[in-house]
Image (cartoon, rainbow, N blue to C red; front, side):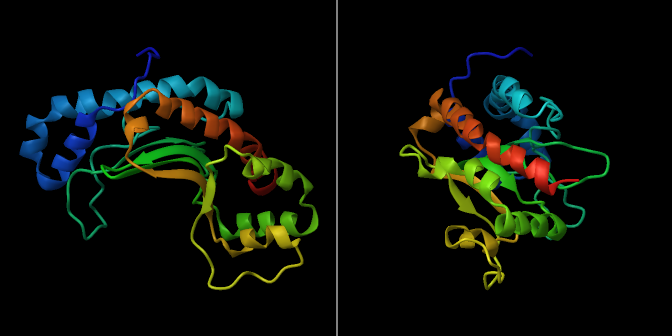
Length: 229
């Protein structure tokens, strides 16, 4: 498959995902496989291909695949250890992430969406305690490079914000006052979050994702350099 002019997702994309939730059976899915291929899988594949040159310029060690279950989410759920026995997913994502044999925790660039909302940015959801301890130590004693990597927060056009699981109390530290907020996160993501809007159904969604990824590149490189073995 070659990169194409991605024109956004279809209205039918969300219609199919909504129906998955209402008709979560193998028989129904097999009867609607064409809709899955056309309205969900193919747009994800085209967007993945279009973004791949940018991702490779940021980190050539990220392996990109248009097969479901690799860079692109599978429609099938893993129900082996889940109380929810629904067979098919009602959400979808693209995840650009290193996948090493040792399964080290790496940051990732991503797009995630449901029939109701979407988000994109860079997540560090799998960061280990050891990784985050290193991160906080740098913020406390040598924060200059980190501060440069998050300079986009002061841009007038910035839409990115910090999200993530938090401690009940900020970890005690001697960092600068304007960095204190970072000490409350167990893991974090820097993302744009939005309800489904017209942008999602146009080429502008690719432009906005690309713009966010480029802004996040310095932070991604900082995390690889200082926190990951």
